[in-house]
Image 1 (cartoon, rainbow, N blue to C red):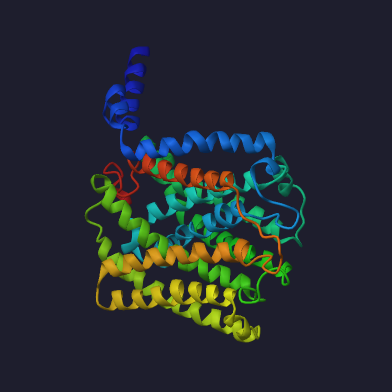
Image 2 (cartoon, helix red, strand yellow):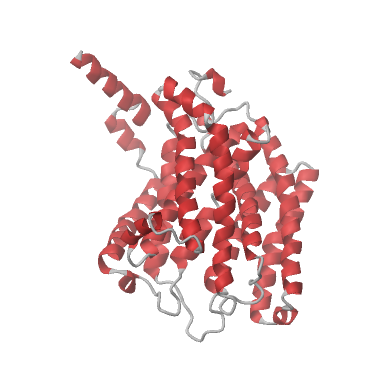
Length: 403
């Protein structure tokens, strides 16, 4: 019995972990230029992250009393979470609206969302002066606080994403009984994901309602929470187009070739064109309502136009043209611009256009930048490790009900 168990464990490690190779062969296969670059980033970045917790924010960041939020909030937290919006966007399309054609890209979207939230939470812990106090959000019911809502919704949605991710994980482990149970909960989990995402994506924008004099008038609006939610949908659509194209190209041997990615990309491109075009006019309306036309002649105005025209209007028109003429490459190019535009928007609101009228400006330290790059690298490596092993881009043949 003991020998049989040892053999089974060895077989599991070899087939499921080492991809059918011996340990020596597997280690040799890791000697690639990509892994070398990633290793270099991690060798510096992980000790920096440890040093931040050992030495404190003052020793590792350029944050101050006038600039308490920096790159780790603007990029790691706000950008990481909004780029993970593809999870609830595609999940709701498949599970709630019955668009079963998009099932082939549902799992990658959920995995990307789950890893995005995990990395965002790590970035948040790094940004908190006393990260151990984050547990107090579970017990201090400050229902009038926006941060209370964000904390609970992020925690709950991350848990929901983990539960959704267990479906392919249990296929990988071969646990059919518990896999069947989790499959039956997917619709309920998707409903919860929409609820939690809607609440905290908009609540992140509501944080800036408290700072009307600190955020530049071109970006500030009483409806900024609506803008945050709409831009989250934009980020989700763009990120899914971008991620699905890369995944099915890089992981060709792991992908389901019955999934027509080009057809799905055209459908997503149509949706992105409509939402981004509507978002563009919402941005214009906010300038009208705020009587902020005069600021367009300033340097900040030029930068606002770069964001809104170059990264919202332009990709929306490219999406529309590409979808109408079935030019998939154009749609994918537009998705890259769209993703960069959402990143730019979050950095503009939380860093660049925040405290815009102060003389002393916040500029992130090199350690802040390196830690952010490290977190992105860890997320990418985790995604690659999981996709190479688990049924993410295609279902497991042993689970026919999945198809």
